[in-house]
Length: 150
Image (tube, rainbow, N blue to C red; front, side, top):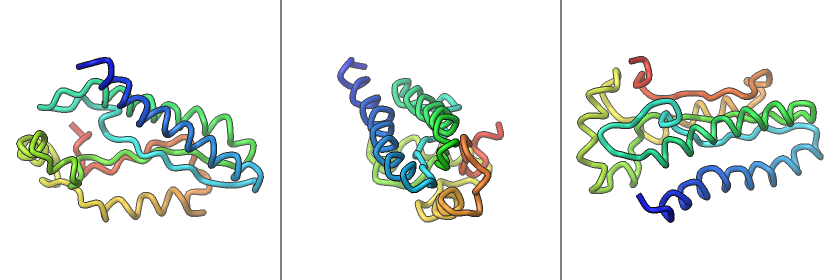
């Protein structure tokens, strides 16, 4: 892995989320309330197989921790921060030739036996954004078809 690849992933997944969260929080703190949801991944807590991706995994772990830290810092201002960690989800990236060959392994190792569809993440996102989760902050909500039960 090149240093450029490492930097690109961290700039996107961690620095990008930090800058977006910071911009969102400025508005939310002024309003006295808000909910930030950072899109992490089960890669924050597992080591993916069979694909090597230590840069991605560690960046998603950093994003989960960033979300927890922001939750602690911004709670006094009425701003909640959480992360949403999907399992393997059918997207263009998951269907790319370099990852398509891993899909049978992902499906085998997911108790529900399949990848998620993007629409199946909507309920979790709505929950975290809504008043239904008004006492939830600093949480990483995992939506993975059971992949992390092993």
